[in-house]
Length: 154
Image (cartoon, rainbow, N blue to C red):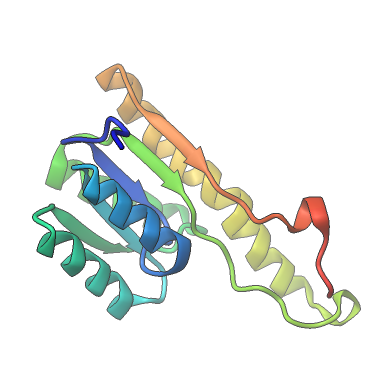
């Protein structure tokens, strides 16, 4: 398959494990340079980056909490310094699921979910869009869970 990613720089937030890891590895198989963002999964992010490099690709693992605007700004600064561009942002990072009844949840748990799910998208887009406009190209893919459409047991 040719996704048109050869020599493109792709940032995958939450790229250390799960779907994000699969997206990062697929982008690398398609010839992209991949930035693997992680919040807490340092070892998995390093393993994902190492797997990409073992395939002959170029990878960079960056720790940044996407719910923190300063972290996101620093991550994009590092991407700019390392690659000088960004052609694709895959906003995949998501919070840990809350595994208890809704009536037992706290403000802090929901605030964390909103901060990552909403503000994480905004912060990454606020940084990515100017870079993409300057280069005259770019793509943004934002991934979310399906619970809003189908519900969850909790």
